[in-house]
Length: 210
Image 1: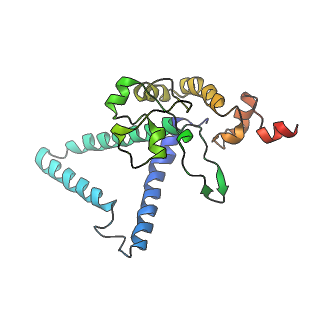
Image 2: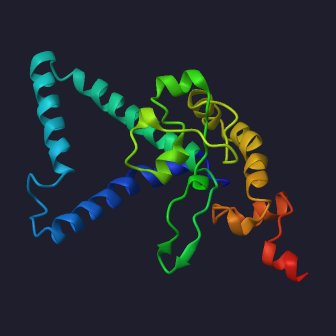
Image 3: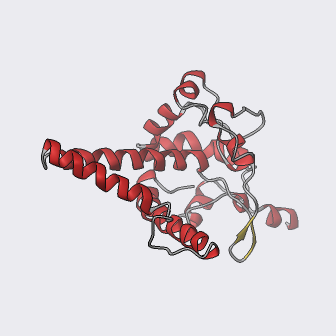
């Protein structure tokens, strides 16, 4: 909460790659396989990409490279935008140092709008994906009484690109979902104090003791 999509982008794009590389390195170590090999499921698509881009460059010339770079960035940005709106402000409780509760349906925002669900193969029913990660996207189900976005992803992406409008639409909705308890919100650490003052929030434990 409080972090713009652009600040999230600068943190998440490189961070996602670093986390993926660590997860894949750990997997290969467990299976006693070399990290730098075709067993690496990050290097596999990277090599396919290099082959494809080289083929297109030989065929169409070097002028195709800016288009490929822009298209690739935009695709990655769309994925990052989805992550941003799917989880904005929702917190998974930390059970111990670096240990978080299992991902549950209430840890994501849902959207059950017909057209955008058809276009995205029910990607917007994200809570069911959290609860059942192996369920196919076209089979994801909608559940009531879970955090819900006011529009489909196409509309929410557009709103997110204008941070003041995003905060106006989403902050009070988020506070309603968590009972205005800052202990249940994933707050931007740089803005925590300002957000607590702006929305006059009190931790539930403090409120109960007072």
